[in-house]
Image (tube, rainbow, N blue to C red):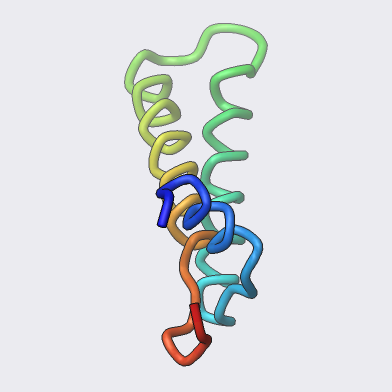
Length: 75
């Protein structure tokens, strides 16, 4: 099967409840990182570094959670 079709099918399939929770957590982490990066004024460099890592981690968590499907579903 084509890998792009597999990814599309997984993205459209229902996400298990545990991974829905992880997806929400990832969205919050990415949103907080984005808010820190776009904050007006002077922000310490260490906080900017943390914000960049938070956006990356949140995005990865959301992506993996969205592509997770239950094994009991037929492919």
